[in-house]
Length: 113
Length: 109
Image 1 (cartoon, each protein chain N blue to C red):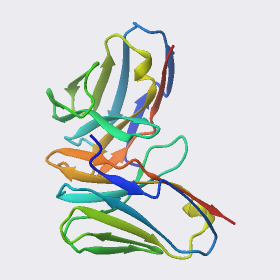
Image 2 (image 1 turned 90 degrees about the horizontal axis):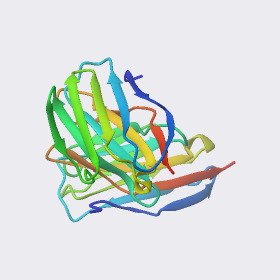
Image 3 (image 1 turned 90 degrees about the vertical axis):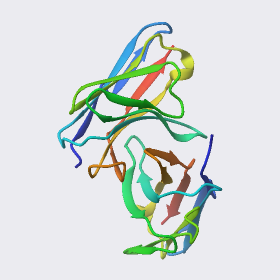
């Protein structure tokens, strides 16, 4: 158990509403990641963080923002949700102090109607 | 951008058979990981390979990293129903991991 939780685990929301997903870790690791997983695309990186207030964009960052005000929490925000953002979202942390192996949370299934 | 191509996409075999899954790229990676994912759960790390030509064994699973660090393979000997799942490879370049699309394996008892 890598000590990662995600909340909520399931969410249904309407197009145009803001949504925030939370990732919480108890391991005190620097690196945290947000991915989305869609059929035919595998896992794609949205944003990642390498420390408090230090974040960077990933492959599919448009329409998403992130914040990390504490080591243990990494928030993903959809400012105005669209149907194309319906997906399963995974948070991950690194096993060591660097961008190495990752351990994943249980995921959040988001449906935008 | 899909940097990593996995093959086959789907594989259905009988218990006791052997199989190989491939992960190919034109890009060089500093390391490569293999994960297994079950429905409704996050991926679980199986192994990390770092050195070109490296071979790692995990019970009946054998992982190999290509000499040029562009490709990898996963070989399962005598597959069991418990091996059923989605197998994902992920390559690290810079601070980012790039995932393959996955191989969905079903082992029939």
